[in-house]
Amino acid sequence: MERTNELLTAINKYFSSDEGTSIKYHGTGAVAKEFADVFQFGEKFIGDAPDMFIRKNDVAFIIEHFEFDCYRATRKGSQNRREQSRIERLEKKLIPTEAGVYFHDKIHGTSSYQDYIENVCRNFNEHYLQINTYKANLKKYGLISDSLAVQVLFLIEDTSPLGSMIVDYSNNSPSIHSICLGACPEFLSLLGNSPAVNCVLACSMIGSTKEVWFIDRNEISEYQKESIDYSKMKFMDYEPQVSGFQFLIPSKKNIDG
Image (tube, rainbow, N blue to C red):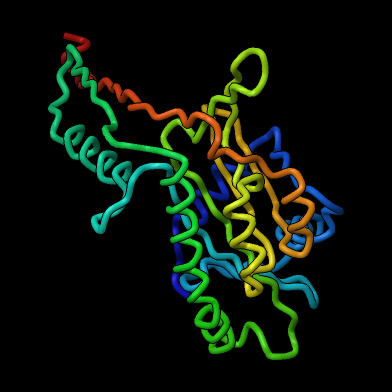
């Protein structure tokens, strides 16, 4: 199996820290606790299609990771990704000087809750169609057999630059909240009607705050009870600012004269 980087990057981002990561869930949390145990102590195989396979005794999980954001997408991909690439290209063209070079730009694009939902559902469906391929590949490598009970987990990461947020005007004073994939009725409906996926680990960042939800499809009704109709709230559409500074470190000869 070939090594992949995106899943490992996501795991390091959300789960490799001294303070640990809180994983939220509704219902009993039985599968969430089982997954945490297998992930921590099980044997891991990193690859491509699927991204990861972990096994502990007779419990096994297929893990497939994908990203999405809240920006409008075309055949060329997400506006956010294209803008990030554009800014990276401009930054690479900068020539550092000892005095320093400063740059400033914006991530241009249109974002909305509708784009958020359409993007995650489209990516979910694309990966869902590959589940039989994932299992066939694992059988080819001798990692699973027909007798081994294997659960499929999608690790879904919201990579919107500043996170996906809404303004709730239902109370006396407006309040800002992050959008939780585990509370989106549209996504929960899709997951509930997708029996080949057993669970979802939904990850997002609001500033430096990590939001991680474990969604067990067998307990989907518990999530639907707590779902939020974000479509009736005001989505925060913004153009994130990007700034940077580069400078050339003088050689030792110049420092010493």
